Image 1 (tube, rainbow, N blue to C red):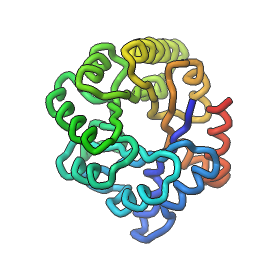
Image 2: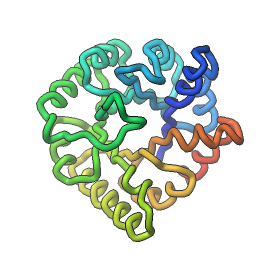
Image 3: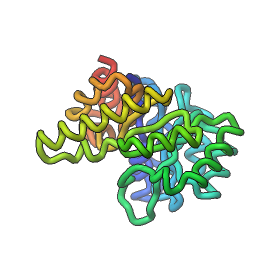
Length: 237
């Protein structure tokens, strides 16, 4: 299993003072040195954290893999076509949300998503769809030519009892197995941390996890290199 690091909240901290520090580009460099095998950033329509220039600089400097999380807003699509990240992960986006609240409704938005996927593929950009662990959504992701999905692990991460956690873990396992049987590459992310990651590691079909907030929070106490390195050792073990 591979580990990708979401650096959005380095930019959140920078923007809180309106200055230049901490620098998300430097954070990406440190994360790669510490064992991250990909860098994730979400260019939101309201630019609340990552900005256009950040994405441009990340494209120039990231040595592993740049995963651009994005909506299918026309402006954002055009930026992706110009930047050409290694991977575009299409996610739902609402202006009022604090963080992404759930997976894409691929069935409802299949026409728009299929058009966006085709445009990204024309530029040589691989595409992943951020989806809930629901069979019908995964089937539609395959039908509209996504080569990859990222399973939304939020319900698992937010489970309040052991029984609920086990139920959500089983949903993820079933979804990952089904997606793998269709030939889709399977990633996972949202709400994962240094404790709840361990059961996810048992799902063999998941090839990569994307983790951001928990690592940035830990970095406040131990430093970014050590926070990333600790998670990398857990995931690679």
